[in-house]
Image (cartoon, rainbow, N blue to C red; front, side, top):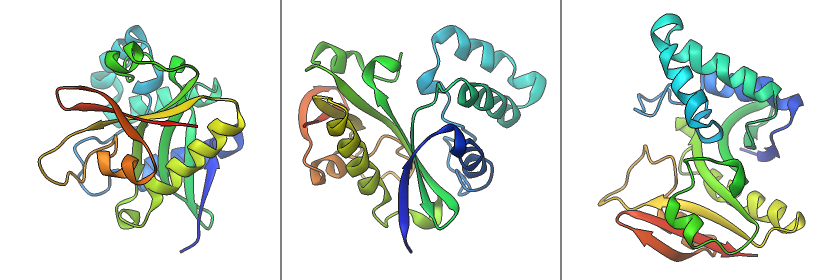
Amino acid sequence: MSIIIKKLTAELNNDYLDFFDNRAFTDGNPNGPCYCTSPNQNEETSKQMVSEFKVYGVKETLRKYAVDMLNENKIQGYLAFDGEVSVGWCNAADMDSYDSFVPKIARMNACGKTVSIVCFEIAPKYRGKGLASAFIKRVCDDARANGYKAVEGYAIVFDKRNDYDYQGPVRLYQKAGFVEVARDNDQVIMRKVL
């Protein structure tokens, strides 16, 4: 397996859609179907999208919004590829590009220009093979190269392993050199100063 991480560009939009159409959430994950549109939507757009679920179907509506958002360059992040096939996704961008997906406690403890990692989805047969760590490394490398001060992830503390955790566990971030900077109940702000 030779995994390559690529930043999402317009040329990769079809690979993004192919991943969410065919490999994401294929294990009965309760977070699916999803096309990772919510992190990059405002509340009004999200409500409009949900109102269309009964008309067009959930997956079809989510895909339609994803296509529009991809065409408008509103979805930011990285795809993992095994050869030519997209096998994973990480939604990561400037903290200010997210509305509700960045916890309030993170904004209250902001440290300057920051990239936020808000979501991971990895095809089931590729989980546990280091893709999330590879995503984090690439996000940090790009953030540093683009003059960001820090990268943050927003982990949720679970009592036991949670295969459906789309934000990543605390230990994943610790392994990458992140430290806890704030906590609100089970939400932990993990930060790596670059």
